[in-house]
Image 1 (cartoon, rainbow, N blue to C red):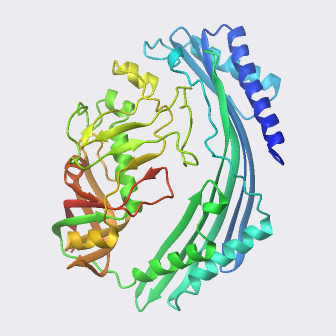
Image 2 (cartoon, one colour):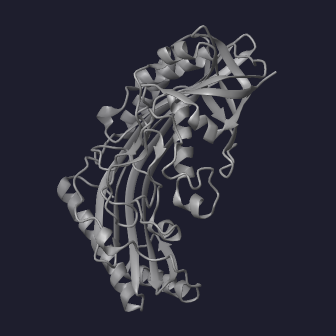
Image 3 (tube, rainbow, N blue to C red):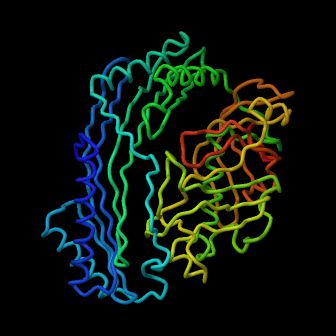
Length: 449
């Protein structure tokens, strides 16, 4: 998909919209009572360098379509990467054949017609970066060189990479809704290895944005990767104990994702969530507000409609610490006798309201405890909320970092951790669609020596 102008883009989008309409028309011809279809077309470039040499160069051009059909309350789906007329008919036929032999499900079907989006504003999501391969290589080498030159103790590199991707996504259904938009995403990353005496550590840094102009410079990314690696040299274990924990912003993102997982419809109707039946109840302290902004211009997950064509809107999940809303698509909403919250396909641009303190102020407030900067493994029981992860970071005394820490495990219960959240920092991590600062949690079990 080579797009040289906005006119080319509009023509390409028009062709994909026609393809979606062809899929829906064919589904009706083959007897489906309703249908939905999605089409995507993407292109990208990925370049990886290591120790000043090119490791891989990868051009990608991907396309695909998916079709779901209903015969009453029996559903079938199929997909293909072939956009030819014959392939479209075959895909629809395959979906129809599956639906005819599927058991009825009273909760399945399209989202309600009256909920469909009627407006698709320009959310500033498309900023293609037509970077040449040689320039991409140079930027990767610049990034890695910046990391390696931070200190002689940076002895090796896992490399630097540059990725750029842009494309089109179109969705339509038999309610008469067809909508779509172009989008782009770019990133630069670097990881290096440091060594001092018997201690060897690695760390990384990256920047990600929809627009090339909003990426951190390759030099700054490399410098941060090098400095983070050096800071971990000399790491050691600590004694097993109970202590306060600060999750640095990029680690706190995972806690925010776990919260959304616990209030998602699929977990709730399966009774596999530690926040079951908590709607309208206190989940966080009163100072906490968690809200979604799907119409944020330039947002990393912005969209005017969700994966079912339902119009998105700003909303609070948590207000004054109280759970205000679940995250539902139409299927899970029907299972729960509720209405969709326009979250088919996920939550779009989630924010937890930051406080006034930066990370240094949070450290002073904690006084003594653990700053977590890396976690390993997956240790969450979504039913009970029990939480246990391998971790690394820094030990803090008198509000100041004393030494790096490794080979420990942190454990607690997410329900108790949410209730015991003492502060959220203003050091927001802008690189994901889940936007949060660092979290100071009252107490956790730290398993070490």
